[in-house]
Image (cartoon, rainbow, N blue to C red; front, side, top):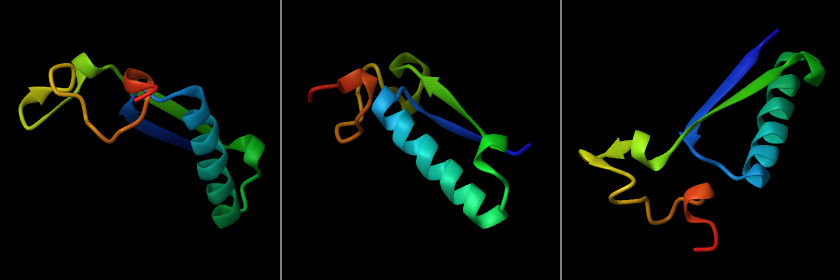
Length: 73
């Protein structure tokens, strides 16, 4: 059974729902594997466990990214 892994900063449930449907549907269409046999896993990273440019995201969050860490912004 195929598995898809998404590694990202923490995502909202709505974002996960959309990504799960999109990735699993596309994979199923391309490979002819039934959707119920495709697994998708999310590896979410908190802002203190990710960095760019040598700076933790907890000290300098990505301005345009949307996820649990900046809901409502």
